[in-house]
Length: 110
Image (cartoon, rainbow, N blue to C red; front, side):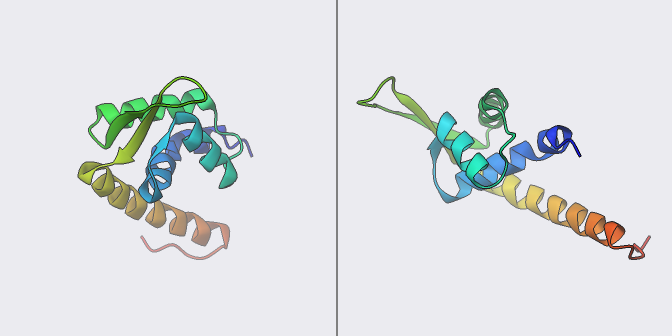
């Protein structure tokens, strides 16, 4: 199964989850997502998601000077981001549970 479409649907949630534990800059978020098992995540997709979540008011940002190159823009969750993470987690968990039941051949309540 091609995971590209699945990833598009859950990338916001995945990025929020990664930033819940620790603030991060763009490539750091990409690296952490890949380390978590989302190897197919694209750099541009993550950078776009960070910008979109920031524009939606779910993230804070700040710049940290780097001795190894350009300054890095870090992102972190704010109260709105934590609320969005909680809501999206609940939605994902319900969806995931339903799919698991369907795939196991269980009868899903109407």
